[in-house]
Amino acid sequence: MTTNSKQKKRGLGRGLEAILQSPDTDITSADISGNYVAGAIAELEISKIEANPFQPRADFDDMAMRELAASIKTQGVIQPVTVRKMGFDQYQLISGERRLRASVMAGLTTIPAFIRVANDEQMLEMALIENIHRENLNAIEIAISYQRLMDECALTQEQLSEQVGKNRTTIANYLRLLKLPPEVQIALRDGHITMGHARAIISLEKDEQQLVMLQKIIEGELNVRQVEALVRRYHSPETKEKSADKQVVPEKYRLAGEHISGFLKTKVEIKRNSKGKGALVLSFANDQELERLISLIGQNRS
Image 1 (cartoon, rainbow, N blue to C red):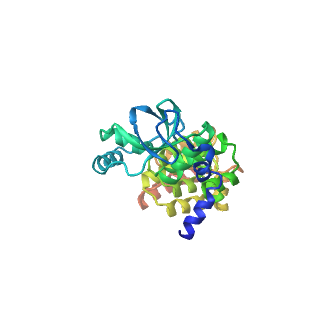
Image 2: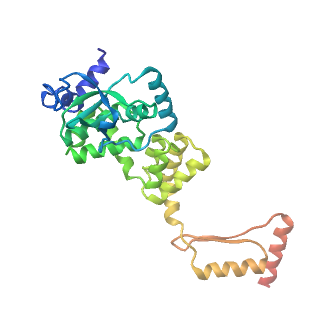
Image 3: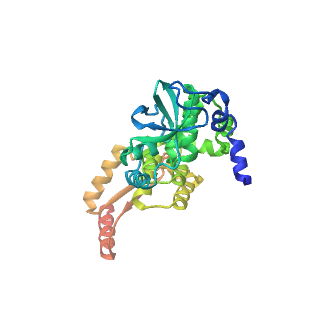
């Protein structure tokens, strides 16, 4: 066993590994139907296996499912699913929903399964940890799984870190994603942005700023480094000062600007900060236009 695998195994702590190896969660003799013993892999009828109500995965890629179904049709189910006993000849899926769904698509009526006994909290923990480690969940699904483990199994971030074998900082970064506006979460879930993009976006303070940045990323096809550079510029003191100084021009000055623009027949822009300091900007296209404006202004003075 490699060092990494040893560390990962230890990292599971009292999580999936401990539950699966505990005598309390094994069928230690013939099960309720009298057919199977502990450690046996049973060939169960798919119709007798109900869905896992704690399944954290919401989306299943159609193409990937069809490919898995084709593989199962040819090779069979290589890795058994895990179920728990619910009563006489009735079972509930703990893990392996992709394999179960693909088996149905492949036309199978039975599937190899390992039978366990677990209460709801153990089952939730097993299902969530199983999916976190073995499924290609998107970042939002992983974040939701972490949050559910903390909420429903009463775990702290430190305990969760031990359970799933992940660094606490990594877990915290995932959990922060759930604070993003729904539009950003959906973009991350659907693959329009990466977790690197999301981590840059979340450093912006307001939802409005985060949504503007999301739009810039998608429209400009920006990479993570470009987004990080934009965010740094936004956080720079100069940018903050400009943002604080920028004020909406009062109505009376805006109307005055429109009057001047009509008189001079050119675009007039009034710039003004919160202290009343600013500039009156006249636009011209060429030297002749500039001379015309100077002449008009001079006539008005005389």
